[in-house]
Length: 321
Image 1 (cartoon, rainbow, N blue to C red):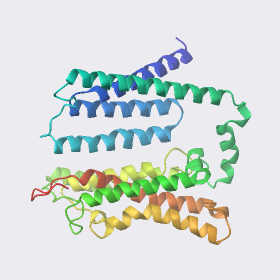
Image 2 (image 1 turned 90 degrees about the horizontal axis):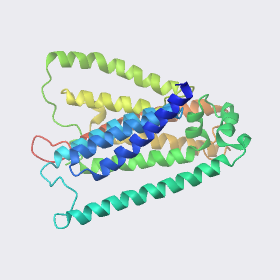
Image 3 (image 1 turned 180 degrees about the vertical axis):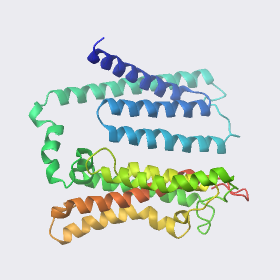
Image 4 (image 1 turned 135 degrees about the vertical axis):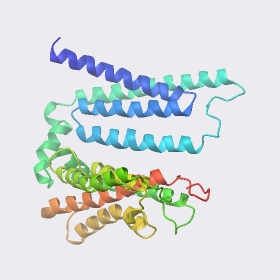
């Protein structure tokens, strides 16, 4: 079997697996299996992005779409385990199941139709005017060497700014779930055994270096703010779960860290306007501006992911965070 045939078979299996996992997750009657299927769906989608030569999206999907979101869903299911675990109405389970199947089928048909129209439109465009070719032509003018970073921070920076604001709003909602503004989000630390404490002390500095490296290489290779932020968020959770309370999760530092990414992004945009450039046009300082924005977003993303996970952790007094 040739390499092209193997690739085609693999792509077909991934497509079938993604649809099967999505449908199974929607139709699962129990919450834990539904979350497990959702996590599997995220991993398969990450593999699909990798097959499409989009490693940035693949890493983000697996780290955030599958791992972080899956952890949040598992935490939510554990916190609400006393609630009924089935989705069907006890009065008419058959009718509810039929409606669910019909909704899934209708959604699949509609998605396939939209995808088909979009694919036909893309294939009808002459090769020289397709978007990837246009992006690659303008990458040298963006201030970075990687096309994904150029698109996110230069060519469609306004969209990325709005996405950062959406993440900030979600983080504020998590803060609103904390019992009091004085307690912060970190729960009372449990006692950690000595070997685990030693491993954490060794792993956290190395993890910080890895996060900084992943952030830096985003200027010329797959990586960037969201990937580095995911690593930082994991380090914060590792510290909390092994008996430490990071100062970054304290009541004073946390709000400032959450707003840092959006504030720096907006400040760079305003400075550009003041010096006569267009909105989010960085001029000859594009590289410095993009690295500054990416660094601030990475810190905010790390704190936001930690806040998402810790917001519903029960405190020692029985309050639900």
